[in-house]
Amino acid sequence: MRPGILTLTTDFGAGPYVASVKGIILGLAPGTQLVDVSHTIAPQNILEGAFVLSGIVESFPPGTVHLAVVDPGVGTERRMVAVSVADQWFVAPDNGVLSAVVRGRTPASIRELTNPRVRRRVVSHTFHGRDIMAPAAAHLLRGDDPAILGPELKSLITLANFDPRVDETALVGEVLFRDAFGNLITNIHAELLANAPPEHWTIEVAGTRVVGLHRTYGDQPPGSLVALSGSSGWIEIAVVNGDAARHLTAGPGTTVWFRKT
Image (cartoon, rainbow, N blue to C red; front, side, top):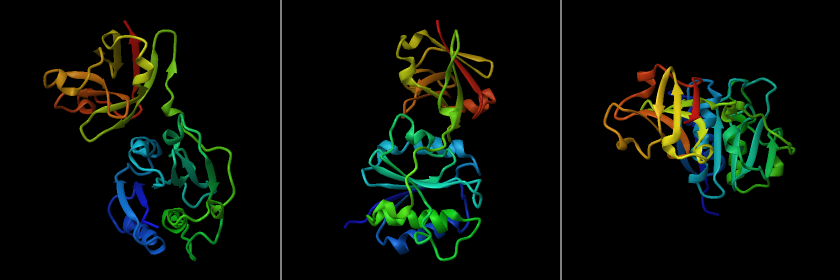
């Protein structure tokens, strides 16, 4: 059997933690192709982890295993799960970090990681990513029966942040993520705005109005504040060749209104 693909998304930052997880994976599933998605998720920021995972689902082939460890509840009674969705497996704490992955998709299977045989012999109370989730991911990479991980579950914890609300005059959303360019990515998907021409939308954010949706950043001169559909379909606010987050003094959690004119 050819080596499988494992992606890693964590808030571990620098230090020995990422390498420790990789060592467990490679020891149990030699030859695994390891892909680092991000290890700079803001510490304990489940929403940021969920957003980052949402951007990779369509990019990986069937059979990929994704290990996501953003786990502020480590050592508590929170569950850990393996979820089969989009012909891939996602191993993570059940704390909402898989919210965007399962949004609009029906999981084929949700397994709780409870089998003491599928974990390290000594389990730290503070590093379940290494001692429980990594061994579970390795078993999936090896093609083992997922039933060995633990019992089936019917549902997951999900975050409401990915669902905008509608009032009498507007779609009301929020900024989910500030990327490295300072672009403010919202929870409004372009599909929700398809009922009016792009130029008929006005976006209000941090006390500022942006008129119309543009095709790409370069459609306007440098320094312009623009709104457009990003590469994953979420509407984002950007400053051409600049930093919208700094310009607007805004970031994740900032409310955004979308109104038709």
